[in-house]
Image 1 (spheres, one colour):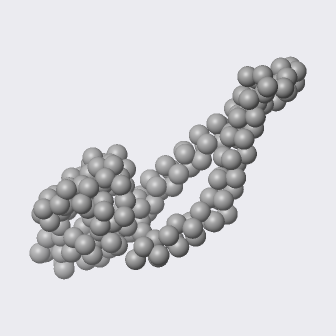
Image 2: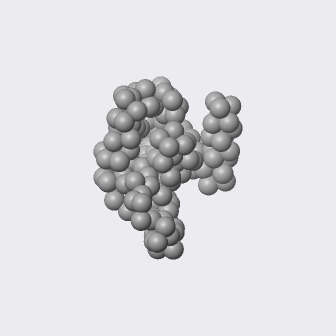
Length: 171
């Protein structure tokens, strides 16, 4: 799966519709920056948006994932195409999962750093009332718990359900 090829294809499809990135973003309820990232290949559309993109551009999902339109000789290559599409979908899901795991890793690192800052300030007795250290310790602890709550919500699927409800209410 070549993200740059997919991005170029998405850009080509958008230009065929004579739309700006901002106009497309508005139609899909995403930011213009998100569309830009798709088209440069630095990010991929969420799987839930692939269906919308395919319908909007009147192409198939495999065409988007392969980054090109299907040729007229595809009937002879149906079995191979289905296999390649399945592998491409697997690669696509893996790329998204890898990105999510990396974000969760860095959020966990930030939470741990915040917790360590809190513990060090508490252990050294620098947390005197109204001192800068007390504020830093409080911020570190608050940041840590906030991030851990977000991670727990993500891992439990609550964030996914919230996003799904938000998308349902917009359509």
